[in-house]
Each structure stands twice: as C-alpha cells, then as structure tokens.
Length: 503
Image 1 (cartoon, rainbow, N blue to C red):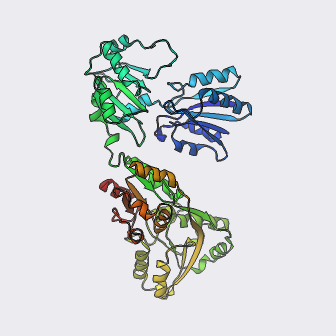
Image 2 (cartoon, one colour):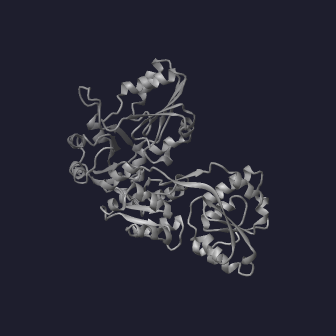
Image 3 (cartoon, rainbow, N blue to C red):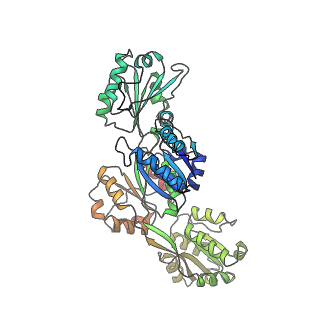
C-alpha cells in the first residue's frame, strides 16, 4: 500500500510533471481537487476509482478530515492512491497535514512536487518575480491565514521593508485588509501591484494597478478567487513581456464537435492560439459487428486499380483490418492511391505509402472530378474501392458511377450520434463563455442540432459558426443558421487560422 501526494500544477496541463503522469497511470484510486485540470484525469487508468474532493475557495465538497481518512482507508485496502492537488502539495495546499496523517497511520507515502501558481501565473502574465534591476528576492505568503489564529503571523513591517516581490495566495477575499496592512507598515500606496486570476488556464486574466487602488480595481473588473496578488516593481514589466494574453484567440470559447478520436488535433491548434476549447463530440466512431465481408474484400485487393480514402478514420480502420487479414502494404502494390485531403494523405504516409492523387479542393466532388480528368484515358476500365463509414455522402460513387466507373463501397466503421456535454454547453452559452462553434462535417452539424436545436442557438446572436467546407456550411444553412467562417482550404489547420483572423 502506498499514497502519493501529486502536484497537478497551476492549471495548464502542459505543466504537469512526467512523474505525476506516471503515478496517475499506475494508481488504483485518484482523489482530486477542483484546481487540478480535468484533462489530467485522462492519464489515469480506465478502471481507476476517481473521487472528487472539491476544495474550491472555502466551498469544500469534502472536509479535510474526511480527505485524510479516505486517503488512509483506501491505502489500507492495499491500493495505490494518488492525491492530485492543484499547484504544489506543500505550497499552501495542506499537503504537509495530509503527509503527517499518513505517517501517523503507518502508510508509505511519496510527494511529487508540482509547478506552483505563485511562479507560473505571474510568468504567464509577463511578470518575472525577480529582476536584477528591481527585485532580488521573493516572499510567498498566504492571504488566507488559519482563522483559528489569535493574530496575523505575518510581519507586515518586515514585508514592507524587504524590497522583495510579494506574492499572496488565496487573498482576494482579504485584499482590502492586505493592502491596508502593507500601506500602514510603510509600503507606498503607489507601489505597482498586479492581480492574476486563473493563471495559465484559458480563463487567465491579469490586471495591473497600484497597492492603494487594488481593492477598487478588483471590484470594478470582477476579479475574484482564485487569484494571486503580486506586489512590487517587477509587475511594471507585464505590458512588455505579456505574450500569453496577446494570442489571437485568447479568452475565446470554441466548441469542437468532431469525434473524440479526431478532436485532439483541432483542440491543440486552438489552445496554442489561446482559445478555451469545449470538447463536444457529436459523433462517435464505432467498429462494425462483423468484418467477414471486409476481410474477404481485402483478400481480393489485387482486383482493384484504385483505392480512394476519404478520411483519417478510413485509413485507420482499413489498416487495422488489413493487418488482421494477415496482409500488409505489399497488398497495395500497383494500386493507385487517392486521398481527399492532406490529413488523410499524412495518415497513409504513416504506413510508408505515397499518395498518387490529391485534389486541389478537399471535397468529394473535387476528388471525383479530378479522378475523371487525371485518369481520363483509362478510367472506364478501372475498378475502384472506396473504404469509408457505413453511412456517408454518396457524391463520389454517384459521380463516378454516372460515367460508368465501377466503384465498390467498403463500409469499415459506423458513425453514430454521441450524447455530448449538452448541459455544460448550454450553461456556457448562457454565461457568454462560448464565442464560436466549429463543424468538421455535415454529420457533426446534424447531430449537434439534435442536442441543441437551431431555435435555441438563434437566441445567442453573438455566437459565430465555423464550417470546414461548403458541404458542411450548406447543411448548417439548411437548418436556418449562417456559416460565418469558412477557410479557403478545407482543412482543420486552415479552419483554425480562419478563426484566428475572424474572431
């Protein structure tokens, strides 16, 4: 039995440590706090027990005593327990108290440090805590002392005289008192002061003010917990060094409706530009119940002159069934390979194969027209295989079939509606946190509107809709909603660039 106190970092999941990730991957039980990024739970085992312990600014879902008892109880059951705590466990996180309880109970434990918000949040806001010209020391302090204490443990006069950069955690509720005490202790009311709320996350905000004006400015700009208070001349560098808040999609909430398997690329590109991504998969990719006909068709690949891949999923499932049939890339020797777009082509390249034809515009109609033009001298004698979803647009087989081209459709997987996170999206729509909804296919439009009707969306005229291409846009417009953003090149990277230009 063993327990780990794991620092989840300040909010940006990219700042989570490798050791923390490895512990989560092995843990039988994960007890996590509100400030631990939800995405970190994806590192946990699928069968791990996940327990939410709350701990949000005084609104504790689970009292500290119960958390301590739970840690000990699960560990005594012989389980490996990971206690996932926001920031660093020993930096104002009560990790020391939890460690003491574990030792007293005879439980073997280990601490995995995390990046604390007191360092990361100012850095993301463009504030270096030390600077050769302005600050040679840093003082970290809690702004929320133990209410049971008879008086403050802080030496306010020493703080005021130190010349150090002062960083207060959990101090927003006591901001008027903190500023009053520092000014009374001798710190000038004009001392530069910054507030950083939800640092390093997509909802990161920073405010530059002065010590004397900080309480009024915080109220005027609705700055509430969780936030840091930073006092010292170094905060003047915020406007010069703050690149995080200058990203083109900073503060924009963007809904991604693609299937979970495909959403990671879109989410990563959007987050790199500062967007808050709300994953709302409206379709789910599921395997077929029976692949006997597929494997029979794959054993007869030598009869085909061309294979057309219309999606990354098509490549993935084609290759999986090819392998299970006992075949490999050699089975495609002499066959022309066509892809609908660059992402699909890259998926094929990953198996060591080059694409013979890629259309200029990445829609089925252009694929068909391009094939008819490039292979005009022999298209009539060609036999084509089209691996795809069981239910998909029939533009390709219809256009080619009209020219008497033999096309065999090979269903490899199903696309079925996903339940999505409807309540969460409706809540974010009502709060104004969603600025754009993106659609990567007609099916994502149709399934999204089944969950959140067009009539509901029309009640939020500020929402922009972005579609990957004209077919998807047409589906949206038939439902009575406008397509505001569509890239010239029908790819996910181009769609993200268009959002950065338009939002």
